[in-house]
Each structure stands twice: as structure tokens, then as C-alpha cells.
Image (cartoon, rainbow, N blue to C red; front, side, top):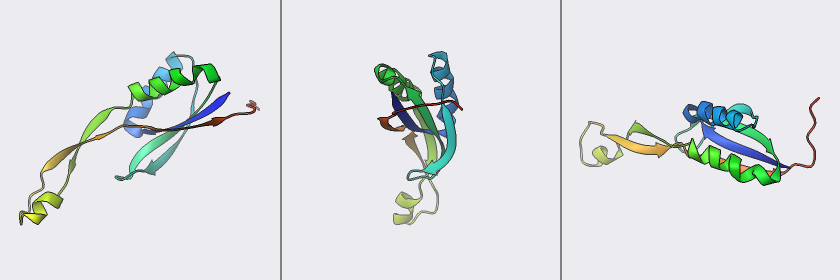
Length: 107
């Protein structure tokens, strides 16, 4: 058995969890913050049989893609302009950690 810990952007997490449940997997989550933009994320914990690891990872990858518009004044500040031009940045990629799980008990 494996424990998969997937750090997923908050706005993608609900769909990831829905798809995991539809595929027959359950998850426990906690809110977390991190990354360059310190965005709110959910850290998902999914216990899964070794042969199902790829299925779970593919679900996370498939449903973690989005773009957001951010303001980046750096480029304009160098040119002497005061206005901010929006820049598209892709977020939504997950970070996945995995380790062996010797036992799992429901108490």
C-alpha cells in the first residue's frame, strides 16, 4: 500500500476530490499555503493499493490545470510607467509525494 500526498490548488481541489470519489478512492485533506505566490492549497492524503497509484496520479494531473491573471508591475516600473499590465500565469500544477504505507487502521 502507498500513501500519496498531493498538494493541489484550492480552486482545483473540489474537482480532484470529486473525481477521486467517482473512481472509488477516498481522501483526507488539510488547508495549506505555499509556492511562489503563497496561494491557498489543499494537501490531499490518499491511501491506495500499489497497483492503483498511476490511476490516482493521473486523476490529480488531469484535473489540476488552470490559468489566472496576475498583475506584475516589474516590467513597467523599469520603463518608468506606473500602470500594471496583467500577465497570465499557469498555476494548478500539483506536487505529489508518495511513500510506503506499512499499515492502515480505521479506529
